[in-house]
Image (cartoon, helix red, strand yellow):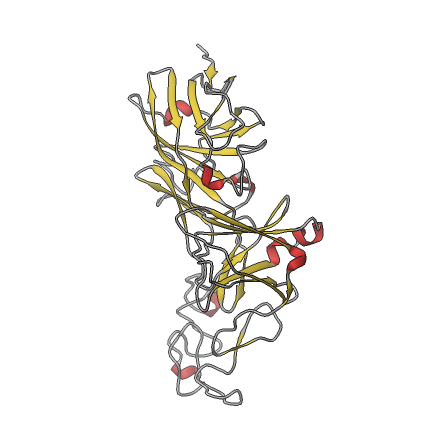
Length: 384
């Protein structure tokens, strides 16, 4: 017998500072389970960034047991359920074919994710391992730029509510999403209405430097992991010199960091790098106190950035390209010196450049025993 899904809650209040609940009206899903779920507003910590739930916001729900029996052949990449906010209430946008198969008869847990692109499924998965139970996503796919030999990824703001307890009596699931955990605590918004600039977002990198030698902590990509079959989220650190990639938002370019600390006396230098042409612009400010224990946002007009340069690491030179180059060859002390000899797949220097010293082969014709993708040249291990 088909049952009706009921999504019950409290009315969303206009005042953002109070602990409000979002209303979820009656709706129907495929396997006839009644849902009684309430969703709390975000913390007042985010008031400088977000004033409340907005039309189009999505919550991705992963129930306990997600991918519990996954293999590389049947790996489930999507969440068990996606809730979408229509401006006044939450609706079920999609769900797995059989939600009941995810539920425990005595109750269990699930995890909810919100991120500022509004839909984690909008940007592609860049890696997954079904047996280990993890999946990674990135707004521009496996897209990063290398500035000063550091990887920089483009990531949205991420918030989660992990380990939400629910009860289930065989027909009705009841849960209360009451608290939110913030994984990103520092946002820099470079405001612009120039669509050309926003369309070039994947090429923009921001470096933030605080004082003489301090930087905010950047991160690379959302990393969802099945931890004892309950999904959790991690943000993997990408570099330690304040570099972060842009994501285009309605009012400009946004850069999200794990945290940033500064006192009112610190000079904070923002260096915007366009890696498509090597152009660099700067803006600096003092009098900003930043505490990594609270979420903070800084908004800067794009027009305020003027020509500038980034810190160049010792031993590197700037050729005006998207990467820095070493000032001389490895093993050399001057640009005109040859430096050390190296062979393919080895990291230790050689005394001469000869096939006879190559660890994984004997000649240019093979046979190779390592890092080989063709049987014509020896043993194939498909390592590149």
